[in-house]
Length: 412
Ligand code: HGY
Ligand code: MN
Ligand code: MN
Image (cartoon, rainbow, N blue to C red; front, top):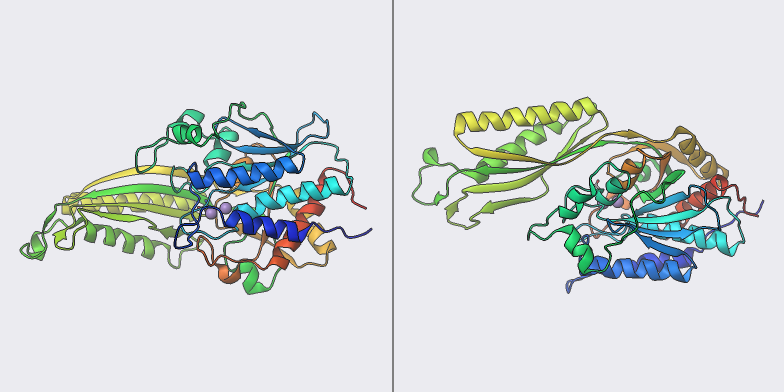
């Protein structure tokens, strides 16, 4: 059987072209959900998909679906990810999986394959959750695990709703939800961590994904003069936030089963050099593959905050922003990833995903699995995010073989 390959130059060219959309004057890449930059990224994907002869549908949360129907009515095989990014992002997170999905379909069409079912390439809205919480929002709404109304009403830091922004950028679709319930879902993604590179393994057959807990915490203290206020008379919200950060670090470092904890955004008010901070607003991201570990960490944090209220008199408001369960992926699909990778002579290992993905949501409604390729230095959510072109093409070829098997359209 000839070993078929995708058109690597086309895939890498599109990754580069999409990665050029949404850069600021300093060259930083940011395409937050439903911004003008996101609109331009969406326009590029829609145009490529339409030129490839796919029909593009947009659902009521703005999810994009590029459909190769083959005149079939059966439940489609779905390949997807996201094209929104974090702030000052790399070019691969999410985009690689969406563009590889489009590339697979184009390769199959060009090879004259006749799949026994439609294939859909999905780009889900607001996977990152940086502008509108929670993350994986579009896929969660699609999978029925997050209410559409709540998603459309979610507000960014300026108070603007996702719904109004989707309308403004022209991506407030009216296709009803769940129209394209897939028979199975596959997501190809960069690992965003250090394991594959460190072990010299080419492919990750992802069999599970850890649970995520996001909170926003606002600590109220008392603004006061930085020079005249004795240390013993301060209600310093900034110092209180630092104590929480240190507490979380102690909780996570060395934990087993492992827990990771991150305070990724922090703002102090009134944010002046000579004023003791009266208020600290920050986010807490905790994750574990073990739900009981995650729940215990949430309890420990709540107790620590309660103690700060009781002993130090701070006012503390906690808001849960996201809570996703750990998931196990479809065993048969994970085995297929291992098999097709080995058939191409590639090294492969099973692993858990540290990052959240749309696959976490799709797993609730369809057999789901993920394929990882290595991340250089384990770096992601960072402009230094990188995977060599040859590795990106190799990962897409594993996806191609997997899809060909699953749509019983062997490639010759
Ligand atoms: O937060 C995550 O893990 C994903 O990048 N949204
Ligand atoms: Mn991602
Ligand atoms: Mn991400």
